[in-house]
Image (cartoon, rainbow, N blue to C red):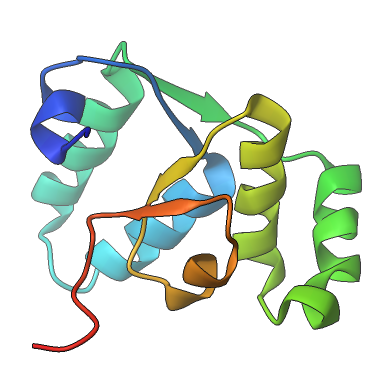
Length: 114
């Protein structure tokens, strides 16, 4: 099983869309200094094991169309559609919506109860 150290050490192949990267940055900007956030983003961009993918307008429209069916927002659905397109089965997320997708494994595994 992959972990965050694998990403830092550039072991394996990982993928993130610009939409999800933007969501991560929006979360981190309230708790990180601009210098640390800059270093984090540049680290992701320069990491050879991470592919950053743009989501097309058509793919995003498709995600919007599936919101009601999947009970998920279009940003998460765009990630799911990208995963299906690329044959990706694992996602690093704390978003519980992905647990409802039987073919997707959420990492890290979070206990249902503490």
